[in-house]
Image (spheres, rainbow, N blue to C red):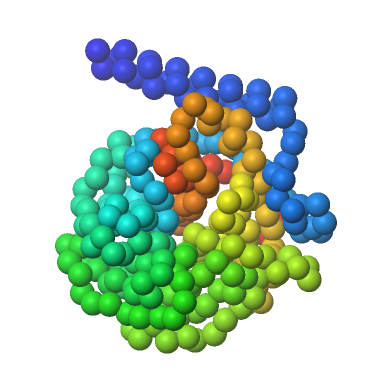
Length: 274
């Protein structure tokens, strides 16, 4: 029986790999993202390395890899949770639910603490990394969208072109950068991840990821994920792309979206380093 299961897994990987290659060969379109019409910034594509299960009921707002596990923050009032999961199985190891009035957003892990934003509640929850016990709250003005860290500061988006560096003890503003592609500001910056010294950001309702300079806010490159529309079955319930997690030890990238049934491990092709 175990050999039959192994054969099935191999067959599925082969099927998706072939399907992806055919889709890439047959459909050379790129994302309809408006900045792609004028940008002089390099645009990279992706290949799929692997796929894993993802909870199709999860309205993904934040995704983080840490020491072999994935941590996810989800949204919607009454359904917002923070959870720790096994990658290969999708099994939930730990879980805490937010009270109904809170709409969960981005999250980050720093110094053995988990920080979880809320959308319009102007509240950031702090949890103990091991126990998931709530340790306190931090407060801010305006909306909370994405959150990541460079190992020192918390880095936050709010749906505008502005990314804010914050003190992890007080949440006070350290500095801000405005994200631009050339002279054009990039709006709707959403889920954030710190990858190889860059800030990577989902753009809300677009099939793209922006690679951003942490110093200047300049867009260093774009990652076009349009082809996922071909790979992911149209019959599946799914919402927008939202969720980027990076494994620095294994140099692995994971992406997913709201209500997606799959978590994908990807590699970026022709990425120019800065």
